[in-house]
Length: 432
Ligand SMILES: NC(=O)c1ccc[n+]([C@@H]2O[C@H](COP(=O)([O-])OP(=O)(O)OC[C@H]3O[C@@H](n4cnc5c(N)ncnc54)[C@H](OP(=O)(O)O)[C@@H]3O)[C@@H](O)[C@H]2O)c1
Image (tube, rainbow, N blue to C red):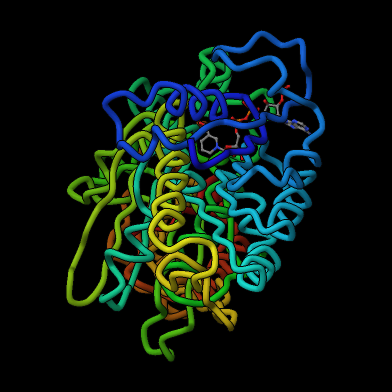
């Protein structure tokens, strides 16, 4: 065996990774040249679902990243610390790194890739976005000839499962979340998923790869799905839409090409759109570029085996390079991060998009006219206005706009809130 892995973490993904490496038959022959040398965990007495020599397992993760025998450190512990420090120490010790940790890369990618480039090592992260779906390498390599205009993804399986269930059974968010937690599709603390934070981490990574510049995580505008109601899903359905949590990176029209829109929010998408049929815990990423047009990557966005599939593909990628060129060669520019500048991000107020809004109004004559007037005064033109029915004696009115500026739309809403007839605005959603 020629190449030694230092595995940090033996949880869901770590176990899947160890299972693949310890059972190489029928897989790529390079796997037979890889050995798990040491494994770092938090507690030594946990039962494990993979056979490893007892002496290989340790709680001393620092010792793994500085072990002279280790060629590649595979970070699968998750979270920001100690993951960040361990990755940086591994790099400082000349180890190549494979990670599935989108949180750390989205926040500290700049620091990590600068260190990696200086040290002449690779940091690969196929598993960090879309779990088992190959999307990082395609963006870095296979699509490199294209000018990318947009990347739109369903990149969080938990929220996609919840929205799919809400759509299928007409249930509200809290009920479906509780069921998802019982079934293990949502974590006890669902914040990172349902508030869109995990999707925003992944979008920062995808955008950086697709648009060729660094992206600050805090520049990603982010709304989660807690506010999506069964009522809105139902009305959206009647209007021909499905509601999905989308992560959207778009080159801003009319601006110099490195101005980007980056946003994560629940979105009404037309039923005929390719992303409308991505259901349950599945993920999909739709990339559009010139001259290719659209290409969509679809598959299991999480889970032990699928995510480990991506992790091991990165390991074999590095092993292949080490075998063919040895350690002294310079880094392959198609596999490193060579970005020097930060993309500039368009503020959300400047976004041009369609909106869906639902109003509860006193049944005062002419209320639809008043709404139309307010919108008109702020250059918001309406595609449709439908009075859906009555709820608690209030008229329920749904509006879908044409493409409008978010800033104008918000100003119109501020004015509409002051109208006597308008009692509440229970939901405001963007439309793809
Ligand atoms: N699960 C998925 O489907 C999935 C999909 C894509 C990406 N990822 C990413 O993959 C990474 C791992 O996720 P996971 O689901 O496999 O996590 P997990 O099941 O919670 O496993 C984490 C592992 O890391 C160890 N660990 C955590 N903190 C540690 C510390 N401070 N010191 C030593 N060991 C520590 C744990 O040790 P013990 O076993 O002793 O507790 C455990 O073995 C995360 O970055 C996650 O975002 C996961």
